[in-house]
Length: 497
Ligand code: ADP
Image 1 (cartoon, helix red, strand yellow):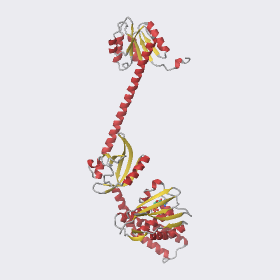
Image 2 (cartoon, rainbow, N blue to C red):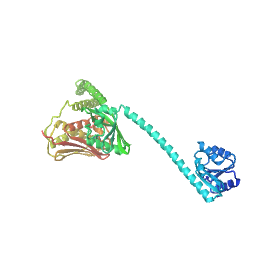
Image 3 (cartoon, helix red, strand yellow):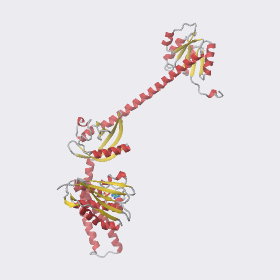
Image 4 (cartoon, rainbow, N blue to C red):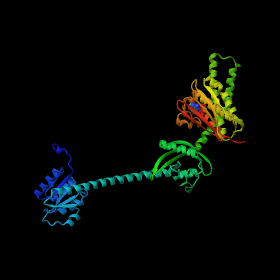
């Protein structure tokens, strides 16, 4: 009790009673219970006090001169500031208490004199509790209404962005890949009508998205919550294949887990890019051939002998021009393969021979790099283009050697299955980060930007390998553990002539 004046009072109570004894009694009783009490003897003063600083509860005598309790209560109920304060009427035993009137003017309860201490306290406490609950409800209500307004605004904004976005957008369910909503840009790009898409699943529509591709995208999305600029193919209703960048995010719609897919059609950009690259490459070919010829001529010494420094400079020039020549040839090779200008020329050959030939071709490079090349061939006839298959194998072996350390081993294995065979090129090199395992098969994609410069590559090798393998209806992929090594797998189906 020592610090009672510092204890926060339970509630503020205003007592309006013209009988000083009553006032004193009530005030003393309530103060003792920890309430903060203000008391006035006149109705008008009570009204002013309530207006100036609204209490939590009012105890109001009915019989008072000038303004009686009913009138005071009525006035309180007319003002916004005091309307919600609970009013408990006080009446003397011999007063004729008009209970109906007491309630109709807005009172919540009444007590009669002489007071029963417990009764007064219980009633006061009850009404304060009710009032508090009411306040909480009101606050909650206001908050909820604000939340609803905010949500509506956000929904409106989203709906507007969804409808008018120039990017094709769709919403699909996570569980079945069912289209729930699409915007007009999506319809325009896909060539389908709304009815042909809505409520249909990605699997049912021939969108050029394989189940495997869809599953791997979904897995990535579920793991990270978002997918960004994932390059993929999209087949329109007319069968045209568009190249798109897909960005996706998980969202909840009416309790259903959904995916918001935003697509960026880059077909035209890609076409221009390819056109530009192949145009430049074509234009570079003639001058390149001429420069190579000139450098070779210089190297023969027919135009005079170069001193040591001159020979060194010439060697640097030859190394670089050869790299440029390789790059131009690979670009053109890839472009011709992609556009179908060069077709595979498959013949029956033995996979064991291909493996041995590839290993022999790379033996010198392996020795220079002090790498052991170990072959584990198996004999089986396959129907492939031997030159292209050798190109693929030597490329993968060259990479394995390039990214290994002195003393490491590179294995070439063949595993036979009933309807296909699997070739594995395994190294103990630096490995490839998980997020690069797929992109390295794209054009000019390298784990480290300096790889092509440092290792003399072009960033096109794997793109070419993938193209060749896919033209044989096969598959190629990489598995790797960083720092421990990588394994490139090729699956080739046993195609019949
Ligand atoms: P490059 O001509 O640069 O070798 P590739 O398309 O053959 O082009 O390979 C692309 C990139 O993939 C390489 O630059 C390298 O970063 C990575 N890579 C390929 N093979 C391996 C491997 N066996 N070990 C580690 N990284 C590899």
